[in-house]
Length: 228
Image 1 (cartoon, rainbow, N blue to C red):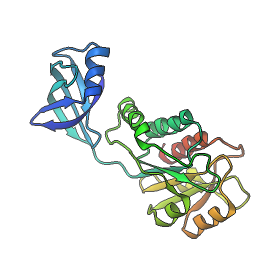
Image 2: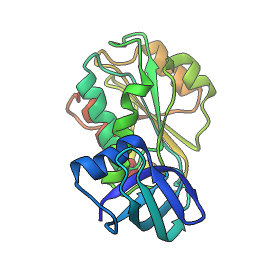
Image 3: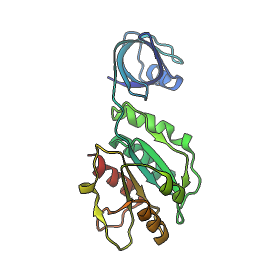
């Protein structure tokens, strides 16, 4: 059963957004009485059938609706790469795995210092539908590394870097039942000063193995270890 996003559910009726309506009616050739499932991105999941196959505002009659509990926060803070496709891959795969919050960071060695959040909204929507998630993750505005490290509040906080030093195993020290955040650096790594600042703010230093990973690989590997 194909899943669609709606932004309103009232009295057993909902309407698909214009883009979702167009996809259902024009692309998938769905028609009246066809069944589908719907989510609203805020924990509601339902099943219903089309009662008005308007390609701009498809109307759905809901016959089953349930509320899904909000997941435990799992945040990914990362320094975006200069390649948009690689950033899209991070958002897509991390959403499928279960990340609830994305924090694009600007560090001393960042390749990209501007971030357009709207550009990635469609990827979030597509990913939660594909992976059967019911809560839409939040992409926060880009912020400076130092500010983020000082202000963010999670039960478990981890930072990955490639420099020498004492590090713990992420798999053994993470806990999916607690709020968690992992910070992944740019291709040029974090500076010694940035690493020290993280330590001062109770971040645990982690290693993701002996190989030096690209940013997107490190992001996906880290959240996989924390979630699965």
